[in-house]
Image 1 (cartoon, rainbow over the protein chains, first blue to last red):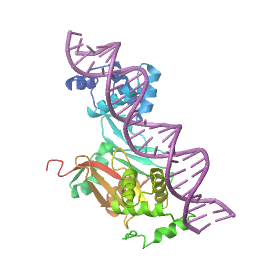
Image 2: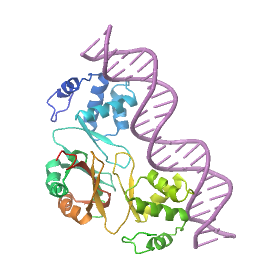
Image 3: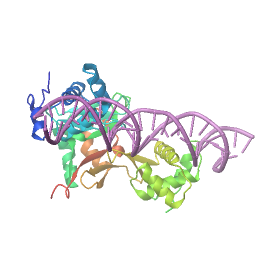
Image 4: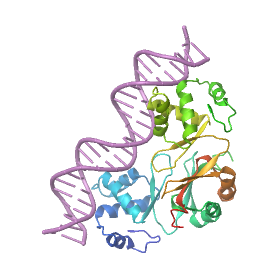
Length: 146
Length: 146
DNA sequence: TTGTCTGCAAAACGTTTGCAGCAAA
DNA sequence: TTTGCTGCAAACGTTTTGCAGACAA
């Protein structure tokens, strides 16, 4: 439970940090753990989660750390609301999101599924989508009055 | 050239305003014209555009007007950058956007095309996408090194 | 020891709001 | 005349930044 059980095998993220000339700090470990625990979380939510375990972190450090982890590919971010970005762990499979405007529900869609749907259209435009960042807003069946 | 040549025939937007109990003001006319001229524009860009024609408008009025025109369906907004939303006229056909992270180029895709690609997948999840709001980030052929 | 990282506080950024006066209907 | 709309200015929530001290390597 300490680190992600997803695609990075064990503590690969620690190596990833050092490879890229960065340092392994308690704050970075805490932020990564929080993102993995929360699933989809805004910077503020990550901050709050970290504080429940250790009060020793600053909000600006959370921002800087999320940005770094994103650069290193250890986490991804998407825009699940018109306001704040949300971060989630790179847990094995990249996925896209369907977000219901009615109930705020988030449906995750496998990258492969989204790719087979969107790929041909995108290719026709010479375009290569970033599926891990893709968010489709709309209405779910429950909220459509079904 | 005064009003949109797209789907709203002539000055239909004026009727739309009054129908909904709103007033026709110079500011609203200026903002709508600016959005039609610019194509895809942030609130700030709309503000700047309006000011080149008439200095008599306030930024908060631009925000309030964009929100109103969006509610009335006279314009749409999408998120073409991680930062500011962009507004564009409801010119005949609803469309989705492909945005290149490399060159910031925006490719518009007909709603019907996007719907036939994404519709079946969405339906499988009981989900009804908002195609006019949909933005797919990624890389265009030129930036992919092709 | 070295250079990166952190905390702090302030600034920047985009957006929203309360209010008094103005103007469309 | 009657509301709704606008301009102004201040507040707002989120994100970024400069800097000095702390700490991983």
